[in-house]
Length: 123
Image (cartoon, rainbow, N blue to C red; front, side, top):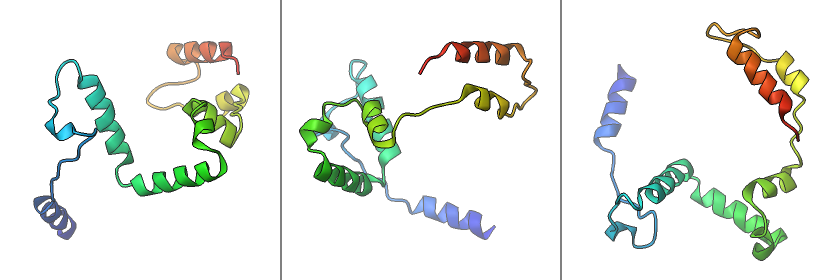
């Protein structure tokens, strides 16, 4: 009960503030023509909120090693592959170590189709 009261109190005293998702955003209205942009920006803000300083530090450190114009050449997935190396998935191991739940099994039709599709993938 004490935790529930503390959470309720925290919610009651929460500070709500507006954050412009784009420059001048506080004066822009969300319309049918810009709703996709708004949703993308709002999701990005929600996912990265609280990590702005850390992301800026990582970016700054990376640009100390690789100049920004060079970084801009790459798509995010390409850059991730360059930094982390290629991802190699051994499908046989993946399949052998898959745990099925909620009534599914290796012989469930949808699971069989899934593995047939996966088998067609190339690296």
